[in-house]
Length: 218
Image (cartoon, rainbow, N blue to C red; front, top):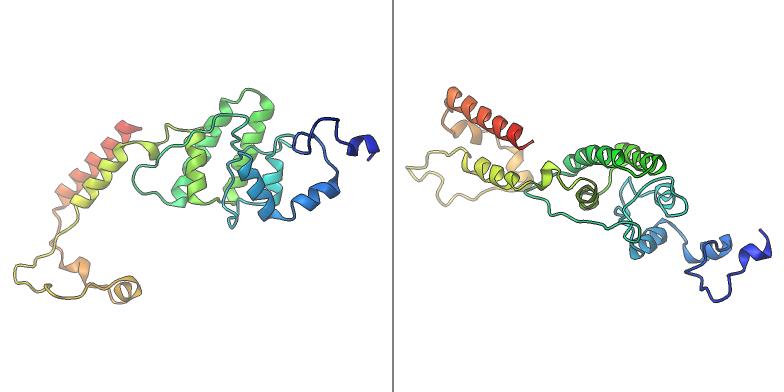
């Protein structure tokens, strides 16, 4: 590296220089934890540190100027956040984000950006991020996802309302401690047998109604 490469242009501080010496970079960013923290502070939407998605190769590759992968970056695009409706698992969010990234790539302004987004999508197939980050990115790339639909809240209310009830007219269960955690699951073999048998026709009608609602909302 020549001395001209190492010297900073007059009047421009270290944060404005497009290139800095490798030894200077190593003195500022020691490891993955440092890199993630600095990227987050500078506007990148990054996964949690202790997740498979958060690798040195992925984060550095998503930086502007490297551009091998894609991450939402506040200085490059307006990052939008959406509130999830109801409960969702990290696996559900990950699967939905896969579809969201494919749709987002199809709308990319050029082939280079499209390939960056698809490389991120392929990385996340085998390197899952934390749920909060997955939902944040999903809300940016695909705000129309089913996970953000208000109908999910009413579906959850209907499921709770349909919970089976058990006879207690004789007060048998009064003043009996409810077990929790491992104590509950260790010997929990009787509860479902105490519930009255469900009319199979009525059960099929409810299942069909829920299926039709999901199809209509899709």
